[in-house]
Length: 429
Ligand code: SF4
Image (cartoon, rainbow, N blue to C red; front, side, top):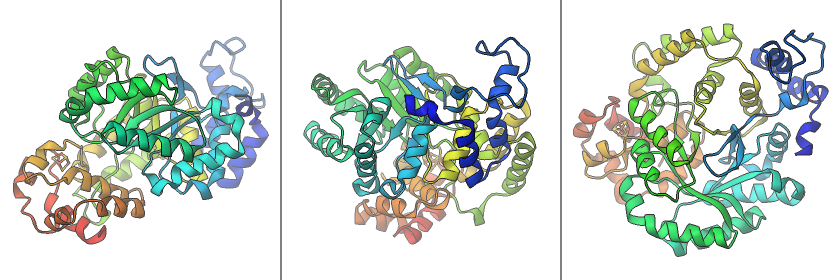
């Protein structure tokens, strides 16, 4: 990756200066000093380096981690592809320079523009392909449909293979049981044809159950799952992650900000105070709460990478700085995150899909909560509306009319399901 090491300290300062450097940015700039002061084996002795000493160039690239038993090492920060990539090629260029070489997209993102944007980049930079871990996903389930979508994806991406190919949004172990053998045979053939290197799935609902089931299947190489400070420390999630680690399955975290589905205007009592306490504390520590949420996840060495939507240089820079900065969260930092999670619990859908779905006659409440999150917290309004529009008309109508009292009663997070489904029907229609 020779291009990656070309980012000199001066280049970095120029880039960072142009788009604004926060406190963690200043520390990241000096991360060579910090690493050396902590006795890195690459340091010359144990003496802290002078501030004027040039930062080791490799200190400025995002570290890599092994991805399960695949033998691949992936950058611990991955570029999510839900943005206008054709018009933001600069983001890809800078991500590559900073060593963010694990890129995630899907056949469905931006109506194909996400894959086409990466294809544009590879067209202009063919030498970079070998250094990238490229992931795309299919929303189809049957092998004929999967083959067709993969072919379209390869053409758009301007590549002859992808490093990982995921079935998008697996909902439950039932789905894995239903399609498992078909997917296994499909993956073996696609690997033999060298169209994919590894196979797996992404999941936003019933994640823990899906991970446990995948660990027993024997042909899943990687999983991308919703994983964040709100849900990562439950016994259920820890045991699901352990099962995958034992099975050699590589794990990528997504939805890592633990963003709320509920509108800011209707936050529960105490949420604002908890957020302000957290923000104030992290500001003193030299990072912001978004960076802290990433750091909390990276503390688990079994999470190979965090996939984050970074549609502009500001967010890219902030996440990059969090990845190269060596500061660990303290006990107090973690406690503040925990308190914030508790105070905003009733605004966050934990993706335990079957509970509310079964109690509402099968309505896809967890999916709609996710669309609301895209709209309310990520600013991905077009994406949210597109996903909502893909629901059958009768389902959209029911979401606005149905009685959700039973689902609400059983929701472990205490979400105001009826109010939020009405909100979705109004704002996403
Ligand atoms: S039961 Fe509640 S937390 Fe679980 S998926 Fe449904 S709305 Fe989300």
